[in-house]
Length: 398
Image 1: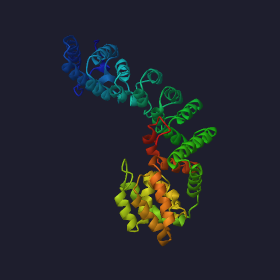
Image 2: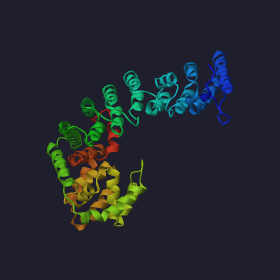
Image 3: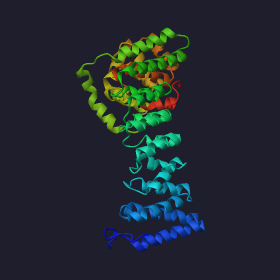
Image 4: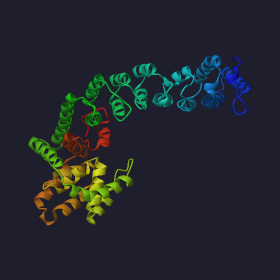
């Protein structure tokens, strides 16, 4: 190592002196010669501490040699140690370039991910190269970066799968070119999760929107026909009825009755717990807590509150039944809602019709029905469940 310049000379407050740095280099070289993997892993973490605190102050002539030494060391340690080192390197604005790039190319996604997802010292040209030559996990990690310019998203869309496309569309920092949007439309042909996310983007070129609506309708129609057998007219009627129902206007006075409940539900049920369980929801309904019940249903389904209320208010309950079926709630929950909505006017024939619909529709089919009906109003219902339905790779799932 070369001598430090006066401006680089550490003072008493600095954790690493020239002697300590030289000692670390000596021990790394000895560990490499010895083949002691435990010692090598320990020294990697000590090097990470040095880098996070002192890399920018190392004399420029010393950096390439230390960087090369770290590359050699990282090539001999185990995956857990490389991952720990990568996690310490990732926040650095300027780090050892060869080491950062070697770890970002690591065959183990667990090692590469922290750097690919957030390290600012990796340039767009390098990321584009990894997006082309790396694996699916590497591309998903890049797709999570806080800022992605169109040339890089173009590369990820072209070489990635549906999961990469979903990750990009869920990333507010990703920007797309015309070619990128065209590639995403191609992914949407195979992945329903991509279709729904694309439909929500205000920057999607308008010529693409009819194709998304067509795909959504085709998936819903195919699923309905599969569940209803040869009853093509019945499938078409359900689609038309749901579309008409959810598009109905609702007065502000009617919606206002539910807003307080929606605020409470939204703050209480977050993350994977999107709403109360079936028994709790049924209890609320039986206690005539309709505002809480419908607010919980709207929140869990990802539907606007007015759409959920108009489905409850509608004279025909098929759309309400589809929403509940999409949430995979059992028949007693739906029956409790029907009793509260229709009371004594709920005829045996209507109850039997809705029970048959509930029994024949799979939850995935019901979700596709409601998505199709809601999409013309700019809503992608059951968005979280779309990826579970098709794994972001197959639009013909249940």
